[in-house]
Image (cartoon, rainbow, N blue to C red):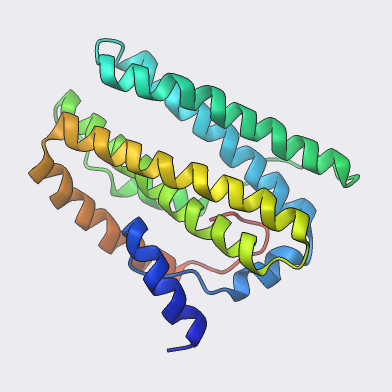
Length: 206
């Protein structure tokens, strides 16, 4: 196994991920930063929207509302930060692209269960997206040649790692620790197969 993968295997243990991203993905992303920044911007926008949707559909769940309300503000702030970076570089925000990775995770969600089960599925999906985002932000913070962008993405990495833990903790709260952990393990195994078969593209954050 290449040294980069050995290092990343140790790092992603804290995120629960089973398969590290090939570091060469950064080389693809660096070829046209306007594309990865555009996709990143929409990822932040969708993260904020997802939190709003969870609050709207679960207003009676006090812990969820209190945890997610500030994340909405944070994620939208991230969206604006990426927009600023795009403008600073003389780029323009491109059109949103289909997110194959997220769509495959959504397809894995178990349907037809109780409201609590449905909520747990959504929380675990969000936790996984945040974990993979944190892992990829880490790669960008290490391997991008431009120091300014390294710091830019380091800050995003720290934030997304915190969101991953929050979503996972909420899933355990509303689904029970044993059930949530069992389902989380299944998600991690499935996500590894998705990553293994997903085309490496420099214009996609996932």
